[in-house]
Length: 320
Length: 111
Image (cartoon, rainbow over all chains, first blue to last red; front, top):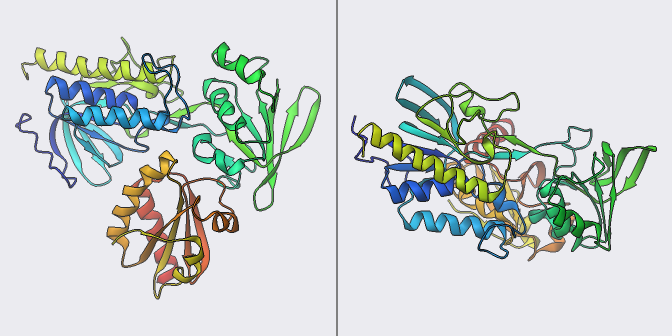
């Protein structure tokens, strides 16, 4: 089997043999692609789910070193352009399953091709977690949203609720506050988990209030969201709002890799030394891993480490 | 096949194609998932164009239509049969899941 010829076609999805397959399209995958391309590794990036990942849905990123502030989508586009400039190869397909019939080879099936990869980097990221309350699914797209960057303009001068207290919840609340007539943040704890700077900024927002130690019981409405029923320390209460934005964590997108590598009970990939998994030729990077800090800056660092680890392994095997 | 850009006022005239379904994608230029969905729609329209007509509506260009259809998030794909809404999908869909979803609707409505 000749892994050096790189038989991945340009244009149509043909699958085939490849040294490195990078699954995912977010910052971790894009950084892995950049480094793999610069190392001269024969590779392909399968942009499953949302290219740009969660970062592309972030209104404003202002903690990426060297860049004062940038829209998440713009940063993701620049990362992809940079990877392509160095020879990054991208395919828009969805990974559906992975197996390893041979110890040193991973078979990756997508919705339109089959690849045999000598190395795999799992960087499929995570999708927003749901609240799991009545009304959430019914009103999705009719007032319930998981993407303030996408949907905030629909709530100009309207009453909006954000559920959550982490970085994403607080950042996107600040974005939504510019549109909404009033913003209520509902958080199950008595303080934010977000960066203190972000929390202070939200607490000083004129048209915002925060309901601490409060959880959502249900979302109600007719054609669209009209109210949210909350469990507060003082009992149940109903708050009339036009929109509910949910930021209560993320679900790792690891289903296609369930049989390939060891996962944690929460679905994240078990890692050792940041990017190594239970299988020597499979690495993992970014939000899909069990590494605690989930930021763009840590995702790109993971991606770079994973590509470098592949390069080291290839050198050990005499493949480069 | 291609995804045709239309204004909101044209929706009624394009959602009753003979023997086909119609999909109207409400999207916006500032929406990242909408940009991601564009190539997916193009691919699916290439493969299902004989059974489904595909259209884009810009929510900023056609705010009245967005309001009329209760659009509160983008991208939202509204699917029509004989001029009546039969389904809607909110958010990004990969090619495989969108194609399967439409094929199921085609089977149930056009069989």
